[in-house]
Amino acid sequence: MPDRLPPLTALRAFEAAARHMSFAKAAAELNVTPAALSYQIKTLEADLGTPVFRRLNRAVALTEAGRSLAPGARDAFATLQAAWRNAKRLNDNGVLTVTAGPAFTSKWLAPRMYDFAQAHPEIELRFLATLRIIDFDRDEVDVAIRFGLGQEKDVYSRSLIEEWLTPMMSPALAERVDSPDKLAKAVLIHDESISPFKTPMGWGAWAKAAGVTLDETHGPRFSQADHALDAAIAGAGVVLGRVSLATRALEAGRLVAPFEVGLISDAQFRFICPRGSEKRPHIAAFEAWVMDEIKSSQGFAAGRRLIRASDLL
Image 1 (cartoon, helix red, strand yellow):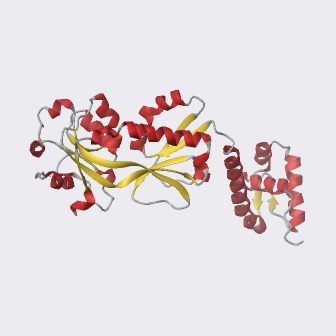
Image 2 (cartoon, helix red, strand yellow):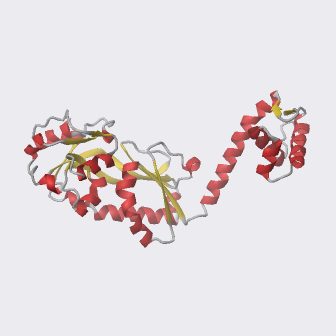
Image 3 (cartoon, helix red, strand yellow):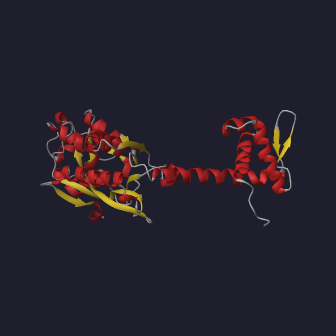
């Protein structure tokens, strides 16, 4: 058969040698002798019917055939290695890798990690704090928690939190800013992490909902929600805080949210994993724990007037 592949060991030897451009380094990586590696490459060249390397005095160079073969061999082995790692992960229910945005990781997940560890000592949590698009196989991630408007396709996706925002400040500052109209003289901290969404979710929208007038052109601006919350905790001003991220600070009294009006975002946090993986024991345990934690922190909405931001348009 003209398209019959050479032995896998011969292709592996070629891929390593082409990547290192050295028979000695490739042999060391594969834990074989240089003579054995050279034999494997000669076997490949015999099957191909043409050399893939030019042997120089102290170096090697790819021939035209070698340059044609090298990218495909490299990609094929990278794909095979990724598939092998992912197949092995399916049998590993002792390690759970979770990715979430930096703010959610620092303000929601990290403070609760000890609680999860106490409830599930058999599971080791690993966090990847990033906002970039995740490929579950490539990045070796089990669960992604993402905040946004879209609904992912071809994955298991479950809504977690209906996000709402309300003014938050330190207890000391709240003694002076004890009514919404006094926000006009306060330093307003701006969390711009949700500014890309189409529905306005800033101070202007909250002021409209609350029936007050505010100058939102001034005040420090932060691209990360957790940094904006930290500034408010330090007493630098009043932040229109996202309750999901501020729960622990509110519970501890480091922040207070004294006003009645809250602004509901159209965006939501979602629990995402490959379809079918939600049934794996460690992922199912983590999902159940997350849902229990969310239920226990929903009391801050009691007695408030929550207005959906999209209704203000």
